[in-house]
Amino acid sequence: MRGPELAGDKLRIAILCYPTFGGSGVLATELAMSLADRGHRVHLLSYAPPTRLRRYQKNLCFHLVQVSAYPLFRYPSYDLALAAKILEIEETEPLDLVHAHYAIPHTISAILASKVNVARPLRVVTTLHGTDITLVGSERSFVPLIRWALNESDAVTAVSRYLAAETRTTFCSSCNLNVIYNFYDPAEFHPLPSERPRLQPPTLIHVSNFRPVKRTPDLIHVLYRVRRELDARLVLVGDGPDRARVQELATHLGVAEYVSFLGEQSDIPSILADADVFLLPSETESFGLSALEAMACGLPVVATNVGGIPEIVEHGKSGVLCPFGDLDALAEGVLRVTSDRATWDRYSAHAIAGAQPYAKDLIVSHYEALYAETLGRSAR
Ligand code: GMT
Image (tube, rainbow, N blue to C red; front, top):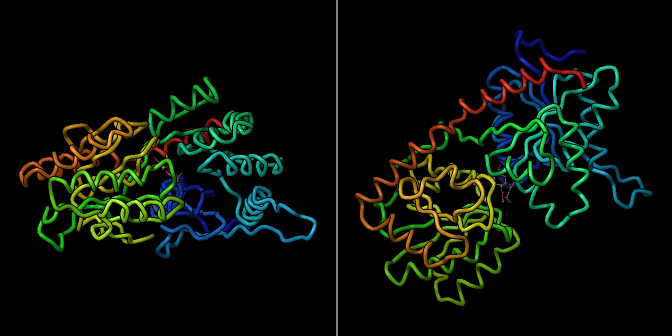
């Protein structure tokens, strides 16, 4: 079986990702939807339907990867289940390539499937999102595995120059590494009319998975400092390990009534429309996709000057960048961009313009070009 007929230059692609409310899953799903829109046949594989997979699309299938409950398996292997699922798809609809978002375990499973499929080895493209590197901080023993996975991949991409440099230093000085930036969908992320008058009161917003690396308690410290000067509010979108701490700190500092916890939400553009400043106090951030989406909606960004953030946010233009952990500087940044309507308008216009080089169509074309190059180069 070959599956549905495709136009000459269109590919059959399997995309492997995490389904969660995190940037890598969001980007992989948006890429899958966009490639399907362009006429490629896309198979998206994960252990749950990704949060961004919202609408039916003709060329896009989702495959649920389930692990076996065989009694002997104390630790059922997702990695093997994923490799088996790739081979199952390949049997009915031969794939041109597998695109793994995250080296562990997705690239390992993709390479395993490729090696099993000896008659027709699969091409493997790996995209690194950055937390692959953070993981290494806690799991040093994974270094040789990740290095092997990158060397075995036919192509590797990193989502920022910062991440590419980190990858070269930690993993492979000579692996074939391309920077392909993350993207946003301009049809979804663009300025929408606000339901409230702008800056009345100034409303700060943060969107994340509340992992320690996001430094979400710092958001409350910043709100507390800003409120010494003006009547600001904070909207928090997402959920994760630090959420309870953030709530406790807000109560402790007496600002809880000015903080809204919205939890995980899918209609981010509508929520951004009612906010004025995007806050991102992360300890590290390989890219900061949530900040890019906020910029596209016209929100200036106040963030820490870490990782790939300065490649996206221009200090003094589309936002304010501050040293990591400098809560006073972050609060001053908020006061600076919200100081008056004309200043906010200027930052907002720069944010919209600054997001444009990362619009979906431009970046997806880079992935298509990389796929074509990878298939042309072939030979595993
Ligand atoms: O930041 C997270 O905790 C989620 C994580 C992920 O892998 O889902 O995000 C990483 O990948 C995103 C998409 O490429 C980037 O925008 C984030 O900056 C990156 N997170 C970190 O580097 C901490």
